[in-house]
Amino acid sequence: MGVEKLALAFVLAVSLLSPLIAWADEAQDEVGQTLSWESSDAVMNYEVVVVDASGLEVFHQTVEQPRVELNLKPGSYRFKIIAYNLLEKPEGEAPWEPLEVLRAEIPQPKALLPETLYLEDPVHRFTVQGEFFKEGATYILVKDQTPEVTATGRVVTHSSDQEVSLEFPGLEFAFGTYSLTVQNPGGLKRTLKAALKVKYEKPFDVHLSAGYAPVVPLYDDWFKQTWSQAVYPLAAVARLEVLFLKRAQDSFGLGLDGTYWSGSGGISTAVINSQTYSGGLSLVYNYLFSKQLRGVARVGGGLTAAQYAFDYNGIAGAKLGSLDPYASLGAGGSFWFTRNWYVEGDLDLVHGFDNGYSTGLFRPSASAGFSF
Image (tube, rainbow, N blue to C red; front, side):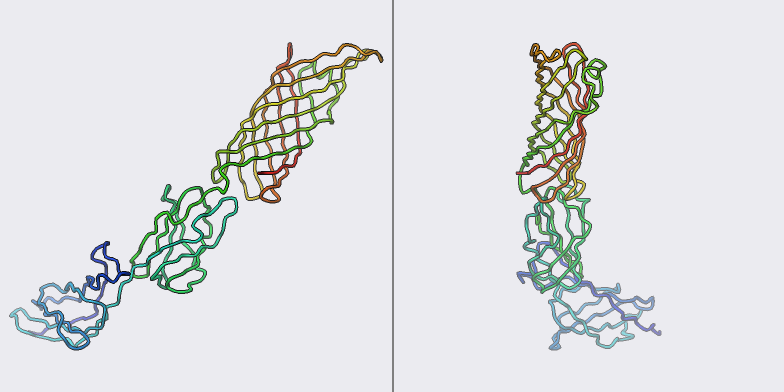
């Protein structure tokens, strides 16, 4: 009975038997390999013989299926396969074929430098230190809190199998921890848990600013009739804000703000000279469009103290005062020249609850500030 020519194109797959085996320690030199070949319907059994480089037989087994499981140490070997026909007689013998078992090394990432990234001053290049980093290995960074946030590193330099420089283009780092997985071309991989910590260098920011804030009366009818100027330019604003809830893209906090404006109003026979001071508390929200540009929103309220001096055709009259609550709503933006210095522009709407009437003011402002 003729036997079809054996197709000895084989696949050698090397894999770890257990994830507990640590190749770096060389505590385990043997791994599982699968040797397989094409089958033939005219063959009943296959006899497989493997010898090492010295010719010593290290494996000898007869199987019915066209595959055997080996357990060889790294090194050079030869193997041959003898085919037995349906009468269990040797019908064909393949020549000796070389077999090379290579050490399957697991990458051992030990450190990702820098270990801490500060969102105020992020870095863009990292160094992985460890052992057994092969050419063509992949480096994957995963955010621990949200595993769907991943990035594959781009290798900048592969100095040795112990140090690699990486960049993660396109990854927007957020507050939290990241783990690094290194996978060698053979598929073996190892993960360094919490390899990178991303946080703010300062737990909170303190912003102090002052600037120019003219007042534009909007409503009520009596107020606009009494204070008839379109704009009252003699005005100022100062703010002290603490942003204590900081996230990757935005931050929240509280602010104290004080304003001053003065002007003259009244009717033809009586002039009212006013000095108005206000102080309040606001909820503050900052949104980071970029490292230099931020959006700002505020909502709050406080008290307005006004002093009025009456003048009747050059004759000084009575002096009165009032203390009334107000509410405010504002939005604006800031541009940061450095990590500490910035300029800011805002538009605020102020509603005053005066005794007997309500007033509305529009207050644009331009200020300069410093962040501690």
